[in-house]
Length: 336
Image 1 (spheres, one colour):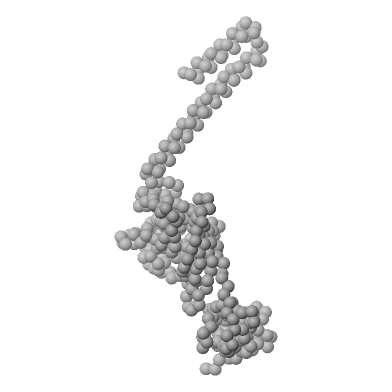
Image 2 (cartoon, rainbow, N blue to C red; image 1 turned 180 degrees about the vertical axis):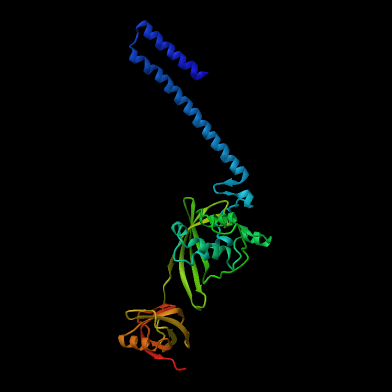
């Protein structure tokens, strides 16, 4: 009634002005239009306010029912994480960071890349490790994981939604089919707050299956709070890592080791092979490359595949440790 009465009022006023000669005809229309525009704005304001109220009500309903974004957390059996007063890198999150750090990089671009879904399934669902408490509880109850639970776990880990429509509706997460080739152990860490994020810097020892050596890395991990994440309330946004170069210096002893070369992997005068064994106390990487002379190269390739005895002298400036690159002094085929 408010709108129609006001329109009628201005229309009557305009008509009166025309009849009394108090205005031209082309001035009457703008008066009516101005009234309509004013009321349109009033209606739009009311509509916008109603939309905001409705949105707030929906958000409130979602929070009460445990439904936000992509997931119905109540149906998934997820409860909000209760944050301690100070940040702690708790077990489930620590385990996730140590697994993710085995790759060359980790960030949102990597998550949306071609290989991430398979990697996630192998290392976090079908892994020999038990996974976070959320997954352990499902397995303990003898249940299979649903596709939505897998998607929720992935989202909990990364904060990025990925669809798993190409897997079965339910999967058995207790198969334990996958055993990672690399593993990290974080020995110490510090943290700082960066806006809403937590930046963790840590020292980590990395070991490779079949390799007796340990490699040291510095890690920088960006975490983002997510109260519904099953990884102790955080998403792992990114991980940067830098290898700590360790140097070993000459101890005055003769050094030699047995090295296997297939003869297939070389470029110019750098030939790649596998460390086999050594009588001394030096630590070698699983793969050792030799920088050789033309004569040594011809000798290796003409006898490969074979085991070779390699001797070398230490560089006066030290050598990176564990040893993965050597300039040999002598190379001979190992006698059987």
